[in-house]
Length: 468
Image 1: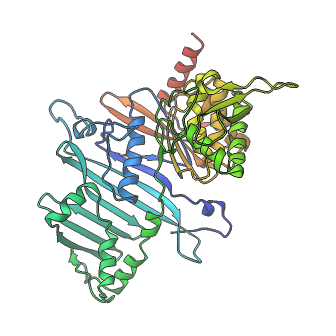
Image 2: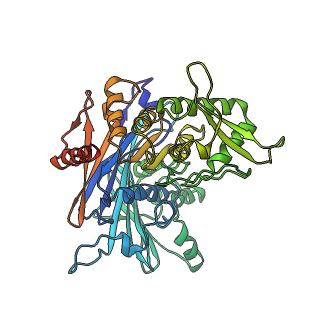
Image 3: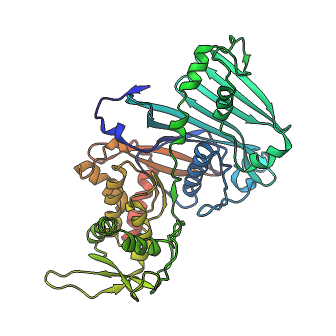
């Protein structure tokens, strides 16, 4: 466990920081491999190399680890299909693999009072086919020298295994028929078993029903204490689900009818959210408006944004308007539908990034769509600012303008991001498989240890853009 100096800025990060994603036999990822994550992670590579699948498994692992919910691999914006489409295809003779494995490592500040430590955590899951869908038949939660594993077996048995520095023990439970339908939708958090033991007033000397494995000693007070210290609340504190955006956002409309703003991947809710903030809180609207306009100016898209109501009451239709400013005169007010399609496509992304109750983890697909290169670069600068404000971003992009801006902003110190706070994941196809290269940048913004295929990819893209 790494001790953090008093006042260390990293300790002040409020969200869970995912450090690594591990995959095996998932979609196009056959080999067991690990991809390094950072506060800002950029996914690059050719089409159909698994970048969207990578984003989907990040959300699936979050659901399984933090909300104990069986992941829905068909939930928008990632419809990966059935188990047959998700399990890796090994070729005609081998066919589909029977299981696939995924997991993550994370670092978070301890929630214990008077403690300034970074807690290292590891989570893993094994999926198999139940009906036509992927179902988790095993999960593992690890922290330092303590690990809790659980297995759901076909004979309707549930096994939990505990490992500490002294040994390993397991407990086997039979699930009754009434529990079966619940478990199919949401898994029981393993710590509930231990809380139940405490509630039944079992003493620390009792073994909680855990039987020794591999010549381990009896489960004792020191093992109970290790289990009691296990950072369940650190694992569970990441309450806000990751925000996942679709690659194509909602179409603009000239006029909107007020309705309750509910998040969706396409951003259909954003106009209603903006109008709601405008109506409900002057101070919150002022802060949000300032952030939107700051980006709009740097991107060359707009200088002002405002809500124009079509009546006197809050429940009447409204419009979203923008304005460009000249050196001496204000330009005309223009409706969202008239200002350019790129604005309507980027507005949901930047609004979600800037709202005060934003998620601590963003999964973004091609946020640069329909933007001019200068606006794409400005988006890279915004990502650097957001990622240095305690929010983790994982961004799939095809924009070298965005990538270059991130490298230059880190080099020039224009945000709080350090070189180690940026990860570039290059997805390279090799026949039926894809390998993920985890690349870093140095203090000069140079990409380190990039394979030849990475350089060739960007040289070909540049040549293509120049018509060569």
